[in-house]
Image (cartoon, rainbow, N blue to C red):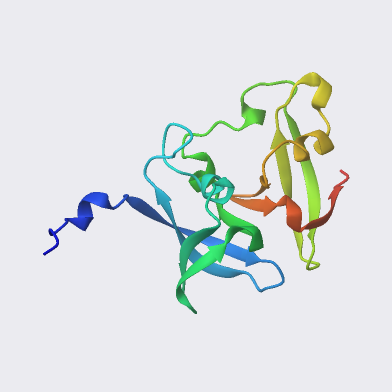
Length: 167
């Protein structure tokens, strides 16, 4: 007879977070994702960007249509969440740190399915790398695009083009 194991001891505590999920070629839909209370690669709770940049090929979410579903990370065109979910409630954006070299570039992003996203890309890089192109070419598959009180985490592999907005 096998010993009885308390499976509750092996559960990882998670926080349920509301998000808008845009899959390649599909309508965006409201989902709940689940974030660990402790991130694997930094101090503090897991962020949606940690989930998307992780090693796992699939992540779990729940939506009203399909219920529990596993999503292939590479199929994600974008995940939109509240700013405080991604940056934390006490975040200080680069532009608020008084960094004279911080860049805030308003852009239009055209996804491969002809879906436009608009927002601002904010980054802080060394003086020799102050172009939007430099920022987008650093490692990582997803980058944050700020849109008011929300942030799109955009999959670079699902983009046709990015254009700076004038004005």
